[in-house]
Image 1 (spheres, helix red, strand yellow):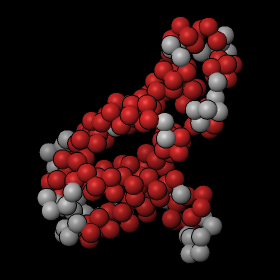
Image 2 (cartoon, rainbow, N blue to C red):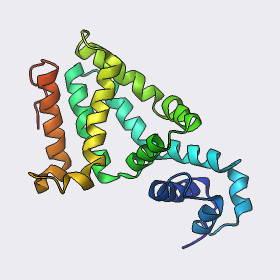
Image 3 (cartoon, rainbow, N blue to C red):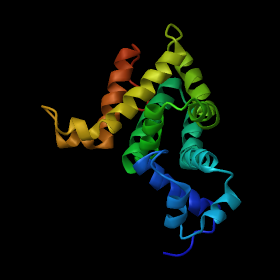
Image 4 (cartoon, rainbow, N blue to C red):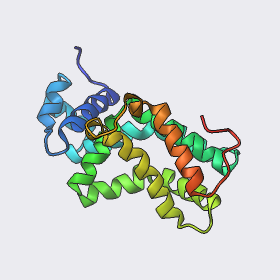
Length: 202
């Protein structure tokens, strides 16, 4: 493997290390070794480990946030946007669970500085757009709690996959993003007391 002198290559390598071992389990020396750099070269790009870690979190979510934001801000009916969002999230999490693991580790570490950065700099714009969508869907419900509940259901079904495989009644199709997406779409349509989306439930 060649030397990783590019900032984005360093971030990509760091994401993999942090998702596997968490913030405390990875040192700047570990990252430098994985990137075939000396530690001093890392400090040329990043002030310290926390700066590198927060940059890695932001980098991990960057491409996904653009796609998700486009769905939330489209001109489609509110329910259609929600169904598309659920489907997209399920496929993104199924294809690459690295970011999901990073967030899960952050919640367990409960570091206030990093969680504040996560909430404001990474999830902020997405969260506001989802809250607005939830307000459109059902003005009688608290939009913040509804958006948190939606994200919680999606994330849990993927983060709990290793446990769910061992639970009574598990079926192999329960791992498929299409099956999870369909289940959540049906559940949310019924729970929101909405007719089926004009897009239809796949």
